[in-house]
Structure formats: C-alpha cells, structure tokens
Length: 177
Image (cartoon, rainbow, N blue to C red; front, side, top):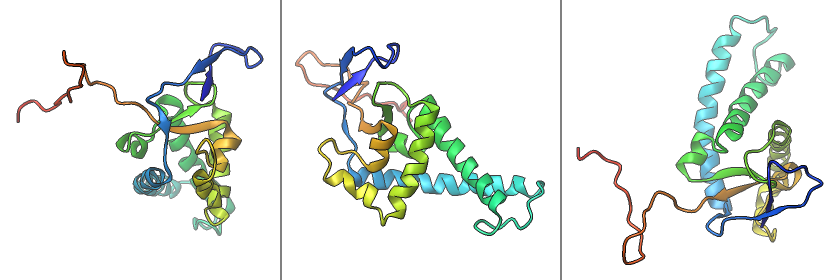
C-alpha cells in the first residue's frame, strides 16, 4: 500500500510506504464496529430527537417528514465525520482498534467523509454487497472505501516497549487497585 504525503499536492507523487504493522480491517471486525457504533448512533439520534421537539417539524416521524429525516441524517453524519476527521476513529472503532485513513495518508477530508457516509448507505442498501465486496477485493476494500478514497486499517500495536531479549511487554495501565 502506498500513501501520499498530506502536505504534498495531489499531482506531486511522493509515496510513503504504509507501516507494515497496519493491515486492512476484516469484514468480521467491521461488523462488530458497526454493531458497537449503532448503539451510540441510536443514543445520538434520541438526543437529536429531544432537541427536535423545540423545532418546527410538521410530523416528527422519520421517513414521513422529509425535513425531520434529513435532520436526523445530518446528526448521524456529524457524529461520524467529527470522529473520522479528528482521530480517524469512532468510539466503536476505538474499542475494536480500527482506524479510518485517507489513501493519501492522515485523516479523511470532509468531502471524503460525506462521500463515504452516502456510499456506505448504498453499500448496505444493495443487500450488503458493498460490504461483502471486501472478501473478494485484492486490497480488502469495500465499495465506499473505493469511492471515498479511504480505507479502514488495524494499526500496529503501540505502547509496548521492547525488552532486552527483543520481545515486547504489555503495559499494565491499572494503578494497582
């Protein structure tokens, strides 16, 4: 995998080899991330719906009131895009050690977040074919990965200092309690 330097214009080819420890996220892990994030998104939509009680929507039923449905989609998108832009990870991605990166390296741009969000809906709407595509793609990318020029990776393990014998030691973050 070749990544582009984020500080270089797109017409300047200055490839950066990806870290060998970074591997593509598998379909099983992706489904677990989606399950974890679904709980968070439902909570966010419930809060957004509570705020909507004070807004002039005609029906406040998702699917029946276009403006209300769009409002909820925007709330959902803003959660994902904010997380992707700031750390490359939603809470579900953080729990399962998955990160979203741009093909050029670093966090995705806003346009990539928007394209990924919309294309992921299409990937799911086609009986999940866009997600199943990961199983057959040489680079293990889904449809929305290809369209948005992003990819989900499992970053290499960090925070494990090397021992004198060359092995690694897991750091215990507990304070002895």
